[in-house]
Length: 250
Ligand SMILES: N[C@@H](CCC(=O)N[C@@H](CS)C(=O)NCC(=O)O)C(=O)O
Image (cartoon, rainbow, N blue to C red):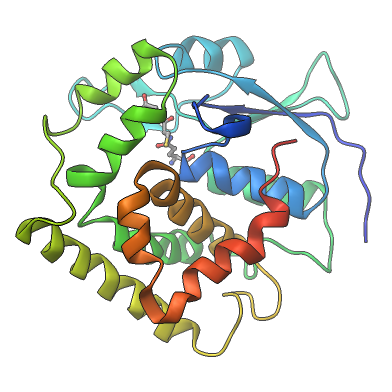
C-alpha cells in the first residue's frame, strides 16, 4: 500500500471517555479514515466555546451559517495539513470535503474512501444512513452526550439546544422512538444485504460514517445502544467490532 509521512492535525472535541474517544460522528469519520489510510496525525482539542476562534486562527472556513443570526458557523472537524509546508499548510473544513481531500492528496488504489466522484450522491447516502438517529437524537442521545462532553462550558452550550428532559428508553414514548430507530437500521441492513460493508469487502466513507453514528449512540447512551445493538442479530455491533482497529486515537 502507499505510504505517506503526513503531518496532519485534526481538530476535535474533548470528551470524558477513556482516551478522549470522540463523540462527534463527523470527527469520528475523519479519525477512521486517517487510520484506515495509515496517515499519521495528531489531535488538537478544541471546544464548543472555542471552535470559532480556533478555526479562524487556523484559517479554516465556516461550514454553514447560523439559521437564527445568519452568521458563519464554524464546526469540527477541520484539518491542518503541514505535510508539504508548515508555513502555508493546507486547511480543510467539513468532513466530506476532508475525505475528498485525503483521497485526492494521498491516493491509495487499494483503499479508496469515496467510490464515485459525485459528492452529492455521497451526501445523500450519508443523509439516509443518519435517519436511524432522527427519532432518538434530540429526545435521548444528546442528553447522554451532556454527560461526556468536556469542558463544563461546552455542556452549557449543548444544554441550551436540547429539550430540558430526556425521554426514558423504557417509557411508552421512548419505546416508540426506539422502534422507529430500529426499523431504520433494519432498512440499512436490507440495503447492505450480504455485503460486509457498503464498500463490499472493504469499508468506504459511508461505512465509517455509519460507524461514527453508531459510536455516537454507543458512547452516550449505553441503555439505548443495548437495544439498537440487537437489531438484525447484532449485525451493527459486529460492524463496530470489525472497525475497531481503525478507531484508535492517533
Ligand atoms: N457539515 C459539517 C458538520 C460538522 C458538525 O456539525 N460538527 C459539530 C460537532 S458534531 C460542531 O462542530 N458543532 C459546533 C457548533 O455547532 O457550535 C461536517 O460534515 O463536518
